[in-house]
Image (cartoon, rainbow, N blue to C red; front, side, top):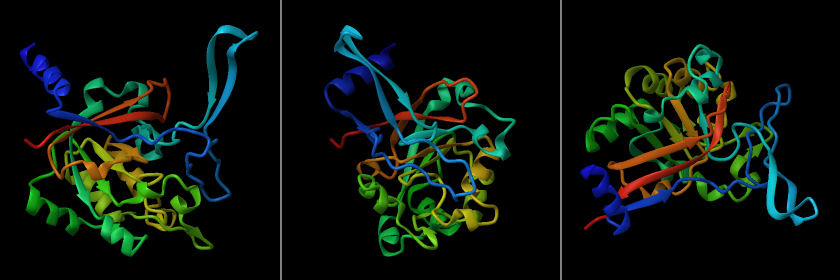
Length: 259
C-alpha cells in the first residue's frame, strides 16, 4: 500500500507527469487505406441518438461507427494471420497493458527521407548508449510523423507509387520479434509498418513477425517527443472486444519529472 500511496502523492504533486500519447478521435482522423483489392475500414463517425431533446430530454449520447484499427489503437496478435492462434484484444492480460517504455528517436532521418527504415544496427547503436531494450516493455519509435496527423493527405504522403512513411525493415522487425523480450512496438504512423511495406518480403513484416510471437502494436501515437529515451511507463487501454483484433485505445505515459 505504501508504494501505491507514494505513486498517488507523486502524481498529485507533479513529480510524476502523465503524458497523453493519444490522438483525438474524430471524423477527420486519418485511417489506413489498403490497396483497392482489399477490404477497407470505416472512418470514425458519431451518430447522434439524442441531445437533450424529445429523443431523450435529459441526456446526450451517440452511436459510434468505425473500424477497430482507427486512430491511436492497439493491435492484438490475432489481427494477423501469423497470430491467429494467439490472443484477441479481450484476452490480453491486464498486467500486459502496462510496462516500461524506451524511445528510439529517428525523427531527423524521417525528415530527410520519408521512406526511412529502422535497421538492426540502429537499435544496437541505441542499446550501446542507453542499455538493453526492456524485458516486458514497449519500444516507441519516434519519427516526428505525429506532426502530420492533422492532415490526412500529408499523413499518408502518397503518390502514384503509394504512401511514403517511415517504418522498420523486414530484418529489423524479425529481430525485434524473435530476439527481444519486448511487449510490443509503438509508432506515430497510421500502422506499425512503413508505407512501402505491402512490397516487402513478407508484406507488412512488423504485423507478421510481431503477431507470430504474441507481441502487440500501438499506432498513431502523439507526444512521443515529450518522453525520455528511458524511464517512462506506458499504459495502454483498449476496449476488451470479445473476438476483436484490436481497438481504439487511450495510451498514457508516466514520466518522472527532473528535480
